[in-house]
Length: 460
Image (cartoon, rainbow, N blue to C red):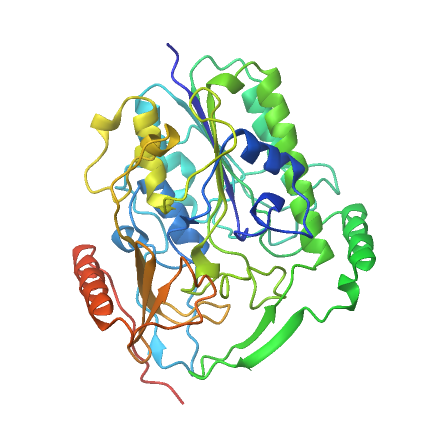
């Protein structure tokens, strides 16, 4: 029997509530909602980091970012807020060449391996071709389309299209072309859209659609952006929070993305390959809700991209595979980015060939309606996020989440099953639980050789 195809759709900066099926009442996502109705939703899915590059490295390697060494977005420079209390921990600005990726493993098993879209895991010496991908269309060192979403793009590994061509459309065209090719091998497609990362750049007709919608429901009269107090640590940020989803241009980007998901799924069906294809839809971190225009809102989840709170790491996740997954199912088990690698290998019956040192677990039992062993999930982000967040680590054990903040070494404990907004700090109410989780977090940090920020000697 032919092994299943895998299409992994990774969005950039899409928040957990940016879909109709996850709670948005302003954005419109009929095609993605259809994917959810026909597949399995994971309301408690998490990215491995609140920013992009570490989550991408984690997905490819099946390891936590702290173990890989890529713990911050790769800026190819140095982000150092001079007035901050701490200096960011050092980190790798590329995925290590020695890492065996899921693409390499699948290629060894006879898969065609294709990367389309954003890469952002190092310079030319660390492009997708070095990590098991036979094709690289649009992947480079860029973290976002510097010249905007309309051609000419200026992306090194993507030939410019006709002037005015839209990038999300183009990447989908490339994906459809590969799906419709005469490739006889099973395929692994890593479709990493640049959307919905800023610049918030959409087609005018789509923006107008949501301008009118905002007017009709009164959102144009809402003051949905609220300046916050300056961050007391003096890291130089003025937080501006969006309290309601209301940005027509961002809504237009999501609308266009949804149209393209619909086109992709239609092409998959018409190719005759849909019945034997696993499709995954997720994001690399939470929605951008506190800076850089704050185009979306993650409420009731607290904050967003670049923060240790739920808005920074909770992401949408839909898995679709009619041969295995019952339509309209919902799995409440917490899952995280490193889980994809062992899941894909288990899917094709090659779990015995997993490399050593993976942190993720196979989600195949969940897709079959069974359970997996409860386990803690960890984060380590020893950096200042350029959205206002400060360095920290965290873990989830069952219903509880503990966050360790490095500036003053204070801890916060939340019951996220009842307090998604993380407003009720239980650190003094449950000292034994907090201590137990602290010990678990510190043991894990030691195991992965986590690096930490240091005191800033230049602080003014």
